[in-house]
Length: 114
Length: 113
Picture 1 (cartoon, chains in turn purple, yellow):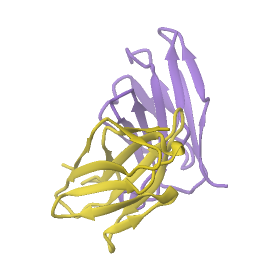
Picture 2 (cartoon, rainbow over the protein chains, first blue to last red):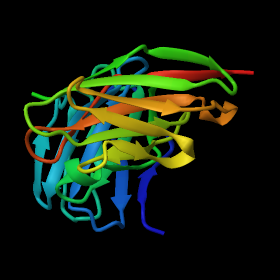
Picture 3 (cartoon, each protein chain N blue to C red):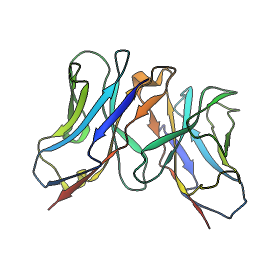
Picture 4 (cartoon, rainbow over the protein chains, first blue to last red):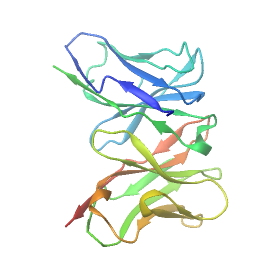
């Protein structure tokens, strides 16, 4: 079955470490997105990519980086510059244009700083 | 720019009662509107969407929503709540530029037995 796979489900990071969250889709979708979710704050857009080798900053890109070398993959790196990384991270994809068809979401990665 | 307001961060209903979750939007272009549901520690799942055509949209799990242009609203309803409906619900509107959706802050639905 087609879908989006996020891994790992749970991730623990030490202070000062970079960590990478994986997002893979087999839906043949052009666009992919990363959101951060904190209690009571809804979804905040970190980065998005509409085509391979191109991506744009969202509303809260500081302290994060992404790459889009393949259509299927859109990994997110949480760098040591992100001062408060503990959150639930959601990856999504859409057929272009996404505003007509909506997004398909992965099951999320919960990142905790220890 | 597009925006979404969900009235009430928490809504509590009794099992069997009507569910009404409110969503108002602003958009400078004809909107596409969506409702998503999120269960704890899971991703978001599409409940229903309005793009064009009939303004009353039916979705999964017995939910429906009505697009009212004059009121800029897209409220979500279900005639009879079930315990399994307890979750967080997000309303979203199509973005003005590119492919991005704009999400509301979410409403947590609690169903009491």
